[in-house]
Length: 279
Image: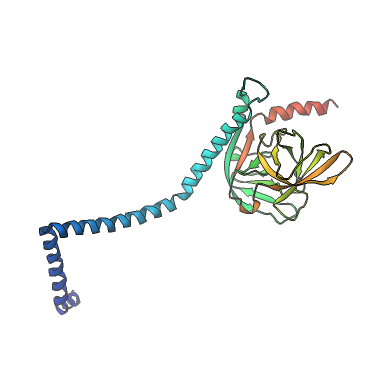
């Protein structure tokens, strides 16, 4: 306390100057309209700039929550979109099958591990059985397909990536040709490309032609774009040919994905199993 008192006594002239200086500014501002207006305008600008900076920091910190809300909204919109894709375009009166509208659910998941340079590539997601995820569910992004769920724990799941030699996905060329084949990666070195096999030789493909999921399996809804043709005829056999495509999914930048749940999958698989039993 003694040291504080000695400090104040020693620098009393400085503190008195500050005190009188502030007091004089207050008097000038209070008794002069122009100075008062200038002071408040300046203070408002400073305070406004401060709050703007604070709000920008708050907005940055809230990006994760906002992004999650957008992903959930996209999942809902994608579910609604599948209903519109189910329109029967061959009928003069366009009808939407109510079963198709509510057939698919989409669960948002985050990629927590990913490989793209191995011979057999896998992806780990932060969703598991407690979130309704089970094996043999398709995984997509807003740009294309990702792979198929293989193993599931309570809170995590591993996905066999499209960049895996054992993956075969039923795809079709655009609606004009109405031809379909099997999408395979086939140990390609580059994660950007894949092959479409078993395309009939009489089908004429062209560079830039889009490739979509066919909807024949319970893994992926019909009409999801997977890529476009860059080499329309790589190999020609007696009846079939291969087509090289550029994938729409960028596997090097995977962050958020959608796990597809087909509510009719069990019924479809059970029915098709009866055909095999009767063979």
